[in-house]
Length: 273
Image (cartoon, rainbow, N blue to C red; front, side):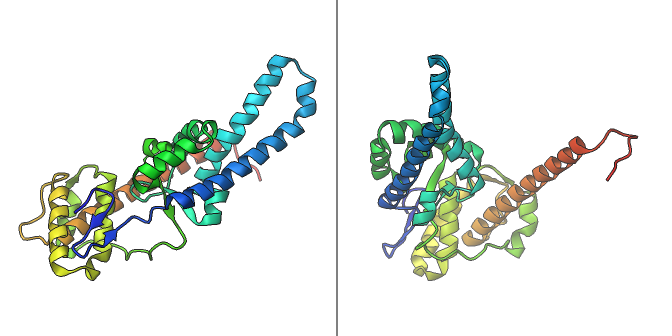
């Protein structure tokens, strides 16, 4: 057994999470950096006449506003709307995802962009490269703060088969109290279940037992006695997935109702085509 990011099975094979290598991240970052600089230069060129016609204070304010828009706001919007992509990542086949493999939100993108101003632009990328080379999954400082990493979308391993709820644990999972699992632990269990069929039997049993023991500290009550460790892992992951999906569906439904209420006319006033 290794850490929460990977599993080293008995055959010495590492089950990884599809994290991008540092050279791929450097290449995608260089492309994005070049695009940002070109956009910044073009923006200043178009504003040259405007800046020449205002006083120094307004000129500095407009210059800072343009820089913030290009280096911070634009990356946040692009990363959020494309679900972790950018021009550089699209070119080399990468995507930014959460530590548990889920899509990033505006909060993750904002943290990465704000920290990126310092570790990418102000240090010419040297700090980001150094941290990525020394850390796990090729993460830079912004990834550690946001809880994200760069995942390969091309050349990565094939998608894992979907998990299903073990029938014998369906009733138990409905009432079980499942606290938040560490992202690395949940990902490790997911990778293990997806590749358990190809593992050596003793290694499979040992790793399954170790993971189920760690899962047990986040679940109450425990499943019925005699439950197979792999069934226990699958039940917890499926229940966790379904509950998060239900919460997100309810949130989207409330947002749709609120939007409809805001756009509707006051009571008693007929609508018109």
